[in-house]
Image 1 (tube, rainbow over the protein chains, first blue to last red):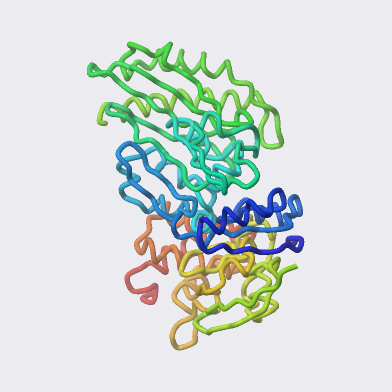
Image 2: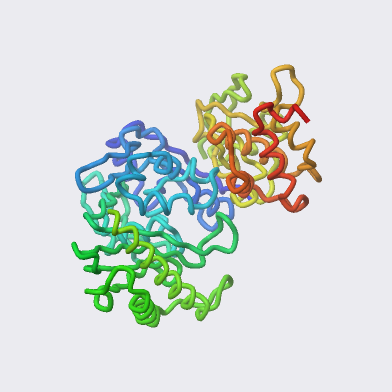
Length: 290
Length: 161
């Protein structure tokens, strides 16, 4: 189908964009890459009266390598992250997860920040942001605020961006020393929606014993679900397979996914448990070289 | 609702067209500019038949209101032909390897493979599979499409038999 008619606005600066959003209020909808929004418009699931296209805001198109984080502007395409050698080196979790996002033709237009704002329950970027303890920067005509990942996602396809606000960047912290990460995902077809995806972040002590371990799961709840494995894993050697199994069993038993068209709740829980264990082990092995 | 005059370079030719904001690039190409190689399947970004190159990068033309790509260079399957006007390297490889059956997905395949080989000129079979995974083909079973990607990537351009 085709989108319903709408008025189109293409602000040339961030200030103009914020003023436009302020003036339009609830009638304004931001479009960046549009790879989630346009399908919704084509299916008439949403029919915005006004689309505010932010593709001219070149000031939002940069990947900034800060001391302790990779800051991704609102116009950075997934493909831009995928190509950035410094992202692969400094933030391997982000680099490992990005190629799982849909297909090349979607990644060359879709934006990483847009994916966060769309807040799909099975999407990669929200889980990675939560796993790394990142944040999203919001601006409005009235000012700005930075929202931590744990408070950003409110539900399936719901985040805390308010009327008149624009998400201008997301900050993905660089893992600390002796920390390994891993993204594992199962989808029914290549490039398809994840049934479950897991982002593991494991920090070892100087003796290669686990100091901290978390696994953040996509596809098992309305928002990314962090599973803290630290209690079970603390003090265990990085390659203590029996302990990883116990940690995944305990972590997995706390998950409460829902049945849907793609998988039963039981299958999703099983999948999450297996992926948590594998991702945890893989991240721990990688941490020995980090 | 708003109408806009936009300028596109389509397969190297400058085009100025007046479109309502809701006009998708896929419809703009087909209806306004008669570039009918761009096939419209699902209109929600799933099937990939409408994939075109926008400033060299593959994109779903059904997921782009035309007004949002004002000023861009668009390449469709028509623009992937050889300099002499005959079939281009990827198109010849598709024919040779039997990667064309009903032809509905073919234009999306052609531009996707052209863009892919620019980024990855010597792909592994695994990478070749990834290159065609974003376009749905219900005829070939993909084996011949993967063969065509690998064929087109041969140093002799697949011309040596």
